[in-house]
Image (cartoon, rainbow, N blue to C red):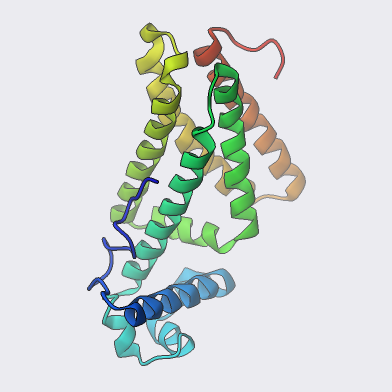
Length: 218
């Protein structure tokens, strides 16, 4: 399975835990942080509050995380690992061009359902966009996911179209995230229409590259 962090959010942690007790402490800090983000929003969450609700002194938080941005970064790393995992699981069963076309909208549905079930993820991703360093990492993660899909499906694409297909996938994966963030901010009825339109566009583009023509029905 693909791995983007080396485990335990290694890019953001001040020190990498070696003992199970330390790993459990980090898990609890991150769990509490995510719950607070979902309840109050990222701006209102403080390191002191995270420490108090995770059952330890504030020094035990700073031992692993130098600031709140590091906690956000580690939460993002875990989120990115999870997304890579379900992309990987979803594309490994692709055996035909039709499977590949279906996978484009299937992945979108998985992502959308995950975001709806865990609204705090939306706050986390909004915070990522506001941080230049983390935003750059998010763009890189989008590239990785698009490349995973490309590698799994390029065999169904005419060789002359493969570079265009590769670039289109990057746009599609990026737009998927933007569309879902918008869908989660508007009324349900409008959100359903936005999702329907995006899936229609995605399916049309995928059909063009994977089957050689635009679909007659969407």
